[in-house]
Length: 136
Image (cartoon, rainbow, N blue to C red; front, side, top):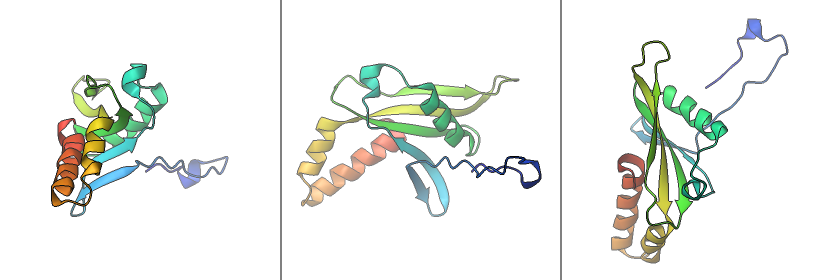
């Protein structure tokens, strides 16, 4: 995603390699970029600047007004999506979005508990779609 220009890299750095944890594809088209965090962002009530910049890069690497999502675990039933809009710095128009989406551990456990059943597979798929496309 990022690379130093060969003629303009006096220090001979290796290219930085930001990579999302998950890329959801429809055929060969990227429909969602996701990053998983292993801390409860709802509890912290903040997204660190580093994480926000990381996800902003993912969102801006996609077509206009794309979204990159941070998924984080929580046990707080009141946790809901937080959305940060990225605007064009000159014209102010929308460019991309970052979403911090809670993965409710009690709901996830409920889906996993029904693992061997067809119903469990459906529940997991429905919950995964909701996390990625509808905000959990």
